[in-house]
Amino acid sequence: MKWTFDIHNTAQRLFVLTGAGISAESGVRTFRDSGGLWEDHRIEDVATPEGFARDSQLVIDFYNARRLQLKAVFPNPAHLALARLQKQLGERMTLVTQNVDDLHERGGSPKVIHMHGELLKLRCLSLAEHIVEVSERQKMDSVCPQCGAGLRPHITWFGEIPMQMELIQQELLQCSHFVYIGTSSQVYPAAGFKAFAKSRGAIVMCINLDVEPDSHTDLVLQGKAGEVVPNWVQGILAPG
Image (cartoon, rainbow, N blue to C red; front, side, top):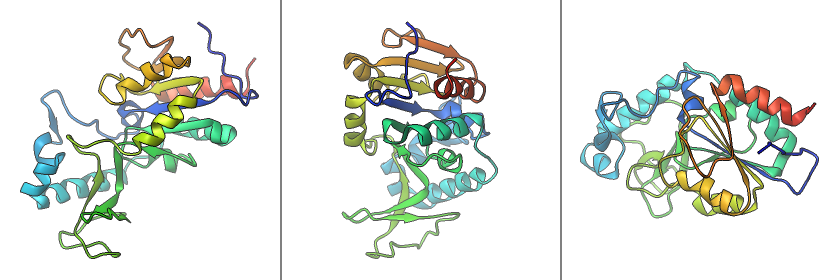
């Protein structure tokens, strides 16, 4: 099957899902190593509601360190290319990321849906769940400026429902083309996006370094996102 996205056809809509691979090329460490640890911590201790309830200081320190690491990395050519494409397509392109960094935004993307939350935000523990920006460290005694409740990292932890799922489903319903980049798309619920898009008639493509055979994927471009994505975007913007 040939990739046939037409930038001039307003009936076509593009849905892009990015994963850890695109950030890893910028130097962001992937979520966990082969031993199931994240930066030498058990996932259960730093990425679950139970871990936060058990030792909130450990969790706060952990995410403070992640924010510090984020300052040392920068958007790569894949981030920049996707931003360029999104600016051209406007509302016809939906960009969803599983990553909690801000590299898409720093790369110039005007609208990003973070289904797993954002490292540079905190969420208050009240029912209102106010969102608070944080550039560096969260202090143990910091509170929500709107209601005075305590704060937690604005991150989707294990056992929690990913964010903005209703909006994501609406965008999946409308897309004619679905691309997943830097992710094997094997972990749910994100793994179900391509199957859902395919069932609605969308053309599905994978851009990834490691590729798993998949009945829902029509096309594969294997390689590093920073090398493949710019060429793919150029092919859409200036076909020839």
